[in-house]
Length: 57
Image (cartoon, rainbow, N blue to C red):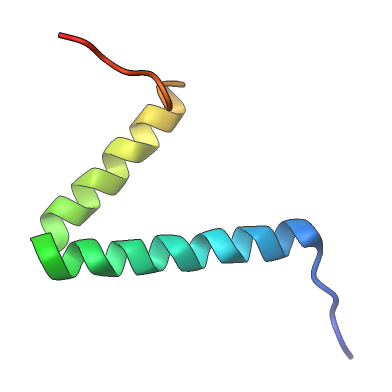
């Protein structure tokens, strides 16, 4: 039985691949702690609708 994947699923898979490569690069250059912190911070910004907003001091 062959399963067809949707365009949305293909798009999500591509993003996961990019995210995996970026994560691997960050771990290689800066270690696991930095990489996990950066990803958690990015998730927080998404949750708070802060993506694309510049924060000035």
